[in-house]
Length: 222
Ligand SMILES: Nc1nc2c(ncn2[C@@H]2O[C@H](COP(=O)(O)OP(=O)(O)O)[C@@H](O)[C@H]2O)c(=O)[nH]1
Ligand SMILES: [Mg+2]
Figure 1 (cartoon, rainbow, N blue to C red):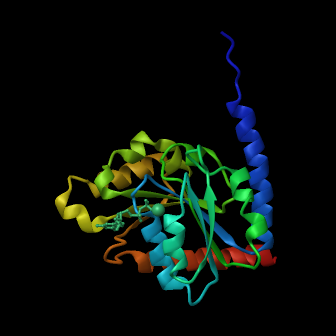
Figure 2 (cartoon, rainbow, N blue to C red):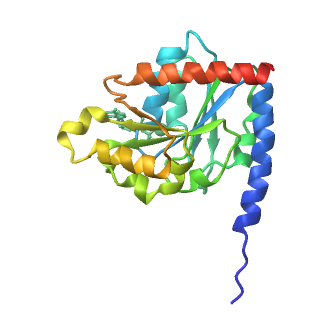
């Protein structure tokens, strides 16, 4: 049997398309964050919390990646921000070509574009979409070993959010070990401990976002 090696060319052409997407996002002066986590970790809840805190100050667009349907998009729309839905149908991640489908639909400038990737800790990490950086989320019920088991995502993510911290008293999740595991993969990761339910940690995340938004504005204005 002959094996055909396609993964490398696929990733190379994806990277080229991601570069073009990034140039397009830069022309819009938008900070683009690729949010990656397991299904149910709290990606949509994080996005909703950020919108509530920042929507009066910044123009926000959400790009929702789902295999099927638009449940999250409908929820986000109700908060009064624009949403673009991408359905991946059979794919377990967004890639740069799918993200490019959103570009002609972006009719105005946004300060912040939050991309909710398909719920999955593996493949979304492999495909750049033209983001400024990846935000990896881990929720406490998933277990503190996940950064060790899914190293690529935690290695690549600039920001790691540990969500559902309100549940810590009821779980065996060791947050010190979880952070150690993240740091082992990625010593420079910026780690936030949050609860989307109580709002704990959102001040800190939004402060970080504002810093990133200002840095992006300076970079794209220059
Ligand atoms: N207790 C608790 N539940 C949360 C938290 N964040 C999200 N959830 C719940 O977890 C479930 C999945 O959240 P969702 O944001 O839809 O996750 P997604 O699939 O990653 O987008 C929902 O029932 C949320 O209400 C949290 O910080 N604490
Ligand atoms: Mg969601």
